[in-house]
Length: 315
Image 1: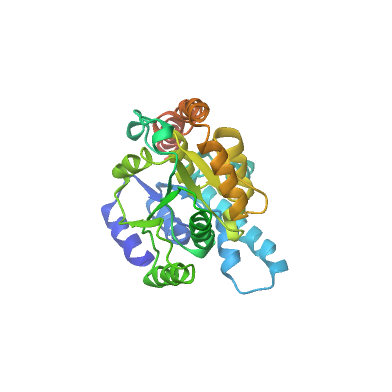
Image 2: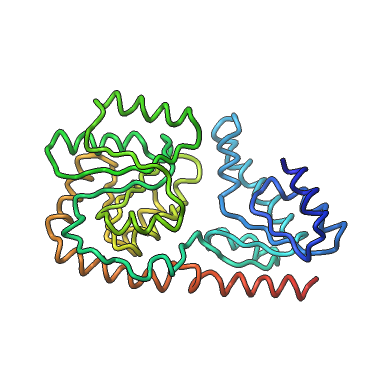
């Protein structure tokens, strides 16, 4: 795949390349040497941790492997021209080596959220939404446990889940988990939606879920859906992964418990739901702050335009 895409891109003879994945680095460096043009390396994963976590070696080797991978991508970016990273924590190694870098988190478009929140929290406080990937590392077990336990406790929460399965095997695994939990009737599955339709789902929901497990890069990642949830005026429910828990504590009306215990999470959700007027005020304040800090137009686009000018001038 990489070879075919690189060959096709070379034939286009563009002024610049933009690559979005670690595995394009080798092909991009070849193109730079041949074309004398620049490449913007887009780093939207913690690739060191991600790939080290997939290599079957003892855990004490994984940190060393992660460091080797990180150093390789920084050296490569210096050859290519510049880097665009998803989080500020990623930028330091590039800056240390003199690589021009901008920070571009996966922020949503302000234009999709300008009119939200628009429905009083009281009218949506029992509606819970999951729009992320459905795998065990993204918390499918806890998701189903929350729904099943809510049903057992006769709580009025209703869980809507977008069917975002990476593969048929993941879909089958989710079906097996539902079956083992007795197919809780308070879970509704929703077909995948295009990005521009997601705000319409968010505005009708009171709580948004991000249930990452302790796996790979999850400890340092903030799921992009959290930015969307906050701007839509939703309370967020997160597991105890450090980065997303810190985000929820600072920028959201958040639910997080140290043990990731389903009953403790539900108890915290009830406390928020039973104070709808106070919650509405807090959600509106957080949404206003989020629109200033976590949108493409205001927080990302200026930096990207600047780095592109740098690449153009250095050509």
